[in-house]
Image (cartoon, rainbow, N blue to C red; front, side, top):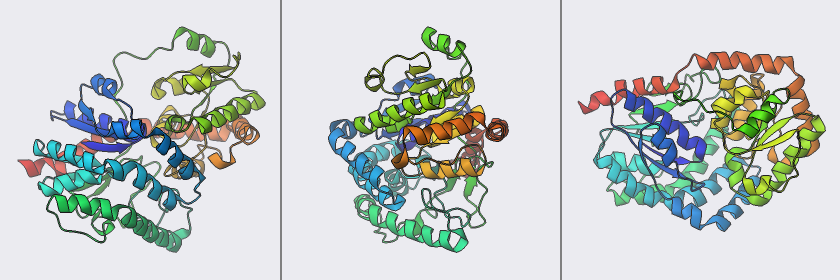
Amino acid sequence: MQTWGTEGDVRPFFALAEELQDRGHTVRVLYTNVEGRDFSELAAQGGIQAASVGADYFRNNQPRIRALVNEVFAANNPFQQARLLIREMLNPVASEMLDAGLELTRESDVMVAHFMSHPTVTAALSMKRPIVSVALAPIFETLEIPPPGAPNMGTVGNWLLWRLASAVLNSALRESVNGLRVRCGLPYRRDLMRYALSDMTLALVCMSPSLLSPSARWPSHLKLTGFLSPKPRATSWMPDADLRAFLDAGDAPLFASFGSMFSLDDVRTMESVSAIVDGCTLAGVRAVIQAPDAIASTFARSPRIFFSKRAPHDQLFPLCSAIVHHGGAGTTQSALIAGRPSVIVPHAADQKFWADTLHARGAATKPLHRRSLTARALAQRITEVCSSVRLRARAATLGEALAKENGARTAAEHIERECVRLCR
């Protein structure tokens, strides 16, 4: 298995890896995290063999990446954002990902790849291995919804947006992808998107059927599985003494964090945390805020605000009343499974899709884009989410539906049915 992206693109692969391993398969995971983080502890928890690829690039180029983040956040066009991210965060590590992917492919029967991990696809095709694509957002064409981040323009408009998205991805990826393909003895392809699905033995969209319905335009080997959630641990997480005391000191607090967005740019992180603190204060709510220590330490102590270090969302969220977050796939999933309503502040990419989807399903307030984030605007959303019986009820109903799903098991069953048989 090989993945690329933020923490929300890494954790689901470990969930699927653990499920496959429990079913008797030998699994190895390669991950390229754009924050340069080490996930060896997470791998050890599930007994998964894993290795990081390309982390040095992200650690050694922090000023350049922060400048890019500012450029991405300033862009109001999701296609421009995608082009920038591919240019600066995927293409520079593609060759290193291919080298690692080739080594992994040599000792593997089946390759499972994040939908943006094109070096894995090249490695698998060059060695004629079955290849499974894993998408954590609806990146395959459907007329019912637009590409992630784009506005819904109806059937005809969405079709045009998908054509535009295909052209943008072709332009951004063509040189890098074909450079790797030619290196591996594969033919040059001018239209990459045309083959994006046909090259796959199996393609999985790992989203809940409660949020997305399969499209009639999808081919038969494209399957909807449900979220890739980690298995419950035998030993439950326990809040430390200070957090436990805060939780017990009053009504269930709000939880607020912009997750991986807080690790990319210190100036924007300070602005965001300030808006969250002031917004919670204006709304008169208690809140647990998860932010980097260097940022949290600059704020005065308050009996109604608790700054938390990292804590497992699946165990902390049920103790909270509502969740303020950036709309990353992982945080969105955790909020839904906990049955808690959301205030979503999307920054870029698929975050707007999750914000719009949860709002349409009645489990979140109207999205508040990061460019429009102010303490007053956030306070209005917080007041709404904390007072709305409808939002709480709808979020709880969705949580009950998701609790009955097992996306990792469904995905593993599809992989066994469609790919493992080819290796026998």
